[in-house]
Amino acid sequence: MGMGEPMDNTENVLRVLDILTSEKGMAWSPKRITVSTVGINPGLEKFIHNSDCHLALSMHNPFSEERKQIMPIEAQYPLRDVLKLIRESDKFKGQRRFSVEYILFDGFNDDARHAREMIRILNGLKVRVNLIPFHHVPGIPLKGSSRAKIELFQKELQQRGITTTIRRSRGLDIQAACGLLSTLEQVQQQKQEKKSAEGLFPL
Image 1 (cartoon, rainbow, N blue to C red):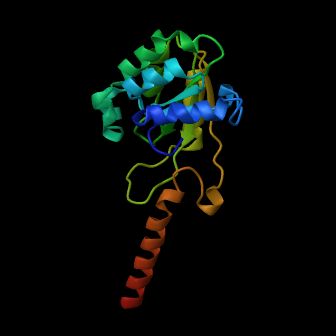
Image 2 (cartoon, rainbow, N blue to C red; image 1 turned 60 degrees about the vertical axis):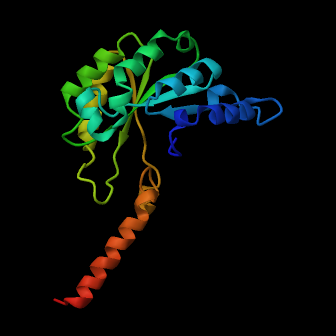
Image 3 (tube, rainbow, N blue to C red; image 1 turned 90 degrees about the horizontal axis):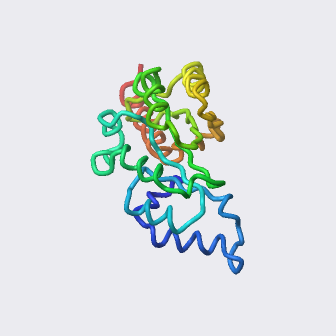
């Protein structure tokens, strides 16, 4: 996760997974590996049929038009088609795990309407939903949902039988939590610009 889209490079991802799980390689169990994707069907189909590793789908909004606003891939590979591919595969009816990653943004994808739509489109799938708090990124208008809203969203899903966890943020105190390292330079630049402006125009 967090190192590019694996289904854009499926052949090499599969080679790496073979090495990691091979007795001549790292000998890891496929059950210890999860591959995360936004949902690119050609590569996803290859992955499903040629690997036994777990799969995580980055959803972030169950409504197509809203999802396009933050995930342009929705226009080419709609969520409904991605879920159809997963639903029709026998590979997720055993021990192999399918999970959904869902970052909650305040006022954008965190109300009861979104929870109910998630319940509807995930109906019948053996799935675990992982709710992810959003760490604010400089220059982006989206804000993270409050803890109370996240827990309410979790409760809505759990009441309908969907296993739902809330990801624990680690490294937040040193600006090293998910998504923050990539924006550290932006933050430092903003601080420097502010410092320079204060020097030019002292109060």
